[in-house]
Amino acid sequence: MNIVLTGFMCTGKTSVGKLLAKKLQFEYIDTDEIIESTIGLPITQIFERYGEPYFREIESKVVQEVSKKNNCVISTGGGVVLRKENMLNLRSNGIIINLTALPETIFKRLNQQPGVRPLLNKPNPLQEIKNLLEYRKEFYKDCDLQISTDNLSIEEIVTQIIEFVKKYELGNTN
Image (cartoon, rainbow, N blue to C red; front, side, top):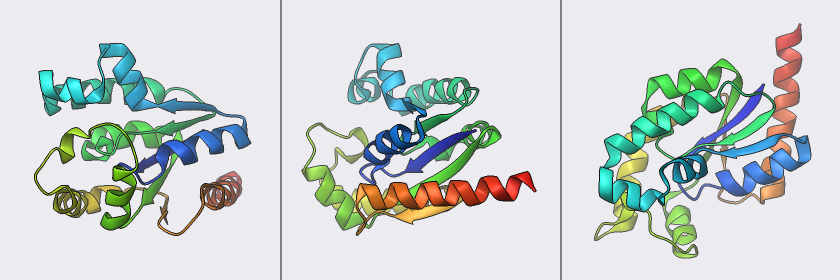
C-alpha cells in the first residue's frame, strides 16, 4: 500500500512526503521530478514548450506507473486530481491524503521559494491561487484524509498521517 499526497502547490507535499517516507521506511516518489527527468526539462519549460495538455498526458502515464509500486509515499503535482483516471490509479493501491492551506499562506510560501510556477505566471498571483483553489476544491475532496497545513509543523502533519494510516489499516483488516 502507498500513501499518496495531493494538494495545491506549497501545501507541504514534498517536505511532508520526505519525512513521512523516512519515518515509515518507504520509498519517496515525486511525480513532478519523474516528469522532469523523463522529458529532460523543468516543469516550467515543459509548460512553455508543449503546453499543459501535453504535461497532463505525461503526468497520467507517470501516475499509472508509480501506482503499481508498493510501500511508497507518492507526492503528486497540484493538478493530478483533475483527471479521474489519475485518482483511480492512485487509489487502487493507496491512501490519499490531501494537504490544504489558505491562499495567503500559499502565496507567502511561494514568495519564499525560488523558481517560477507556470500556472501563477499572471499579473495577480494571489487572485490566481484563489481562482485555482476554488476550481479544484471539489477535486481535492477525493481523499481519505484532508489536513490543513497552515498552522502545523511538518512533524505534526506526519504524525497525523501515521496515526490515520494505522487506524485505516486496522479498519481494512477486520
